[in-house]
Image 1 (cartoon, rainbow, N blue to C red):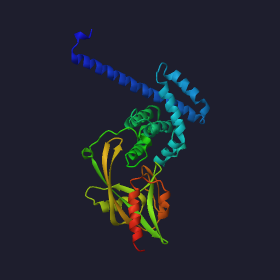
Image 2 (cartoon, rainbow, N blue to C red; image 1 turned 120 degrees about the vertical axis):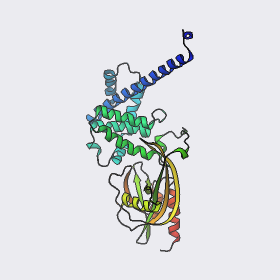
Image 3 (cartoon, one colour; image 1 turned 180 degrees about the vertical axis):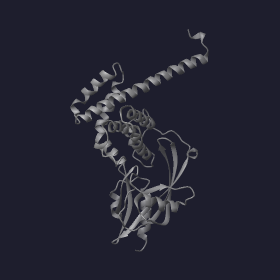
Length: 328
């Protein structure tokens, strides 16, 4: 029968068929996530009764999706979210500090649990980050309140921005999977400035570090505005981010990496780091600072016991070497 059709006709037919299959798959997955959300809602609303979760899931599949051939995905997703729930909830609290977990609506917090699980712990080859975020936003819009979509987008976006940092744990992606090759020169460039900030107090050297929602201590840094020098921009940013009045002493090094933005895609970030001094005063993290949850002084001897990114350690080591060589 195919002889009566030309090559382009056949190509169009098969392209259309493939499109229909992909569309059906995506629609099924959206329905599957909706069922997981319904099951999480009941589990959450009834007091976290783990013993009846499978029964609730089976009932929801039978009631809302009879004939849906995606039971393995649904069951695995629900079980994995529940297994990671304490860890996911901690990330939610850190990414949305103004909203304690029990004050977030039942729908919104379970949409976030689904989105964060797929974003941070799922298979990125099967569910890319943007798909995970968009699916969660659609669930929020469908089942949540008027502002649920914006709220979910804000929380997931704050977390997603941190994934592109250099040296981050590979919990968000398979270590064995090669990343898609990207020519850095073709990406938009953002200039940032950061510093190893130190203070001398009672004969000891203290360093000012910030803590991110992934459990690492790192250096404070921020965006350099157009026309602003790296030094001036770093002084301004650290005052805004941790309320430290710093004095730049010397340049420590530079770092460049590719980060991801939920709306703008990949971006090249170039960071210039300095050694800077500051008065030993209480640090105050900028209110609503996405991705960070603490700022603190540490004695130099305490640094070795902290969870610090591999790319940041050489900068701190270089700074301490310089400081130790100077006479007090």
